Each structure stands twice: as structure tokens, then as C-alpha cells.
Amino acid sequence: MGASSGRRLSGMQKQVLSLYRGFLRVARSKSTEDRHQIESIVSAEFRRNSKQVDRKNFLYIEYLLRRGKKQLEQLKSPDTVGLSSLNVSLSQTKQS
Image (cartoon, rainbow, N blue to C red; front, side, top):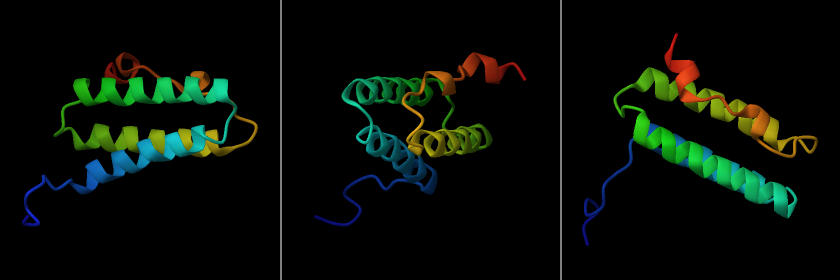
């Protein structure tokens, strides 16, 4: 097997995957109920963005990454139990 047999990920794709894994890692530190809620919201949000956001719209992807990193930092706080207050829909951000 050659090193080029699999598709290589771009730097941005690696950042997105790293952010996703970060959310799942933090979710494990929460209660079982909160963990399931967080995992559900995170997977739905990432799946929705993967379908709706143009892969070449780097500015918007970078914005989503920054927003996601801030949300992840908030979620790391022991006082934060869920993500519902952190959700912003794509339609709200696209109108600007």
C-alpha cells in the first residue's frame, strides 16, 4: 500500500475533525443525559453544515471553526451542562 492510497485531508478538514473530536471528548465528562444531548446536537450540527456549507467558502468555514472553538471552551466549564444555549442556526448567519 502506497502512502497516496487514501485521500489526504486538508488542514481545514483536520481542524473540523479535531473540533468534532473535542466536543465528543468533553461530552464524556458530563452526565449521561447531558452527554447524549451534546453528542446529538454536535453530530446534527456538523452533519448539517457538511451538507449546506460550500467546501470552498473558506471564510465561512473559518468563522464556524472559531465559533465552534468558543463553544467548546464554554462547554469545558464544569458549570456548563448542555449546548442548547449555544446553538445558532445557519439561516440567521446567512442573512448578513
